[in-house]
Length: 481
Image (cartoon, rainbow, N blue to C red; front, top):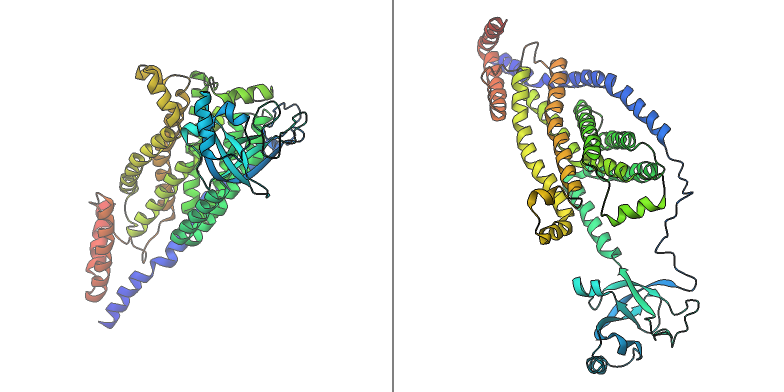
């Protein structure tokens, strides 16, 4: 009995070093592919690296104030609605009620004003609020705002520190809300939740995200401004981002390398489809104010190239998600039942993949729909036919982005799964020189786990009572041979 228990115990403890050795072998196989690919990508990045020069750009910065004009910040103390013409002729110290009565008797158009206490100190100033802001969102007491201070502008004589300019124009004009504190609070909450749930891996993912944005801001965006080839720029930059993010967040392992290969394949498919779709659908940013601004500041900037680059970048996050999940799924299933055939292992892992495809397709579609919601509402109000609306200049870019990203995502899942299956089968994890389990009738993921458990029980029983388990394995091996 004692020897039997010892034999059974050995059968259970043996896979760990063998699994580790198998993973090292898998790493060597994958390194032979990924190291040359990484070196080639870094060489291309060095060749494409932008100079950073902004010569020839004619973009007027709206935040460069004229001499004497400053951008100030403050907190709103009181909000009033008055006649625009009456407000221009009265001092802000008048009571709200008297101002409203005067505005009503004047009969002119109504303006919204916010009495704002400057952060730099001093008496409250009367800031005129833009009509679109007043109508859509409004301003409330306690809001922090940024406003334009025209009291010291050249050629603008002010009636007083808080009064209107001599020509009747407002001396203080709303520019934007100050959102620093809400964004800092949300970012801190996000980081706290990620680290609390994912721990060190979550922290590494956050640091990797900072590195990804560094590549985007220092390499890809300046490269687009300088007219570098957008397809090559997007592929090289995205590959560098994925190499850094995946290895930094998930560590150097065969699983991560497999996921990286699948991600690069998905990137390649997405890039090819994006290049074709941008040209075939004539995506040129027509009707976009931002695109028109960029087109006018430099002859090197290609709007279609920027759109192409955006189509590739937009799917990176979801692509990374599905490939790392598929790679991990294959490894877990194989270590549960190492004797599973490659075909059945692929089939079982793809059941997980199909569930992931179904959910991520919705994720991409709704993410893009949410980002384009104002455009969707405008197009709906036009009362155009659905087909015409979806192919219009306003919506076609979002539709193509959804389709291109989804196709690359869906194709990356079976390719990642296949690569993972080939790698784990090539490493050949075994228990005591024999397959740990032979699940000839495995049909799903749950059955794989059950087969692994049954195999463990049989191994223990075989050690205790002789060799029935080994004999059954020998018979099955002979039949399969």
